[in-house]
Image (cartoon, rainbow, N blue to C red; front, side, top):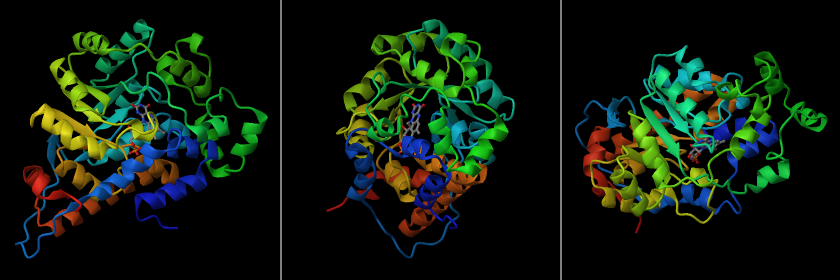
Length: 382
Ligand SMILES: Cc1cc2nc3c(=O)[nH]c(=O)nc-3n(C[C@H](O)[C@H](O)[C@H](O)COP(=O)(O)O)c2cc1C
């Protein structure tokens, strides 16, 4: 199959990855209602078609996170990229930086910030989980400063991990080492297994110096997730604000009240996110949450959005409804798992093309014109 859209890459990823990892990427919590709503609710909006406008050169650049960006979307934090494809984080960052797009590294990564900084000078962001071990949290901040990270995304919607039933059935949560039965399942995906064998046993590089977190990525990750601070509060966001001089973005906001609170605490923006439907099942879709949040925070405060982005039209709708920029999650993880670095690059190219075609058919010459047109270009479906 020659993949031509994100869904094709999803299918390719399903064929290439051991089921335990594909389901981990693909699944959501409980009945997966929010996961589905993230997709379905893009259908609640329609795009205004305008014909016979004089062709003008198209400009897809726009401003978010305090900088002029080449495209209206970026690669958001996805854990364990290095388990979906050998050196996955390096592949993703290279694909992003090839088009001048920022990449945000997850706390749950095989590669460290220093590893990535060694291969690229491009825009590198870091997603932080605040741990109950504040010393280690401060070490993460120091590593981010050393790697010239200018934007820190603090994820706040995972104090307690939602139950993802696909993972429970597959034994993902209790996965700490390679057992014979796991190896047997891995052998069903020889291509992936060879790729992993080539890169050697993965480990979470950022905590390699901490033997108390165990050995090997699976055990380290299990211990790391146990250490995520379950008592995190707005006071801790203030604590972070004092320690982080760069841009601070709160990831995982769904209500106008929480967005206003983040703004008033001096944060530089929020990511409207329900963690891709992996946390509170029954929570609103992100696209539905967006207009109310924009109205509450005013036009200047940076709003990023993620959740269910699979088409260029999804990005056009999010921008038209008030997002400054959009973040990809699963879309590029499918690309990486399906076809390595080329897959990530292709996902970026596919979405770029879809945005470009859609804007042309709308008679809109640029992302900034889409932002200016806003609700006159993206309307609730009647
Ligand atoms: C496999 C996977 C791992 C993820 N890991 C993280 C993570 O480590 N930190 C984080 O803040 N968000 C994480 N997320 C959430 C994404 O950043 C993003 O919010 C979500 O994927 C957006 O939904 P979408 O994938 O449907 O586009 C993860 C999502 C997936 C699918």
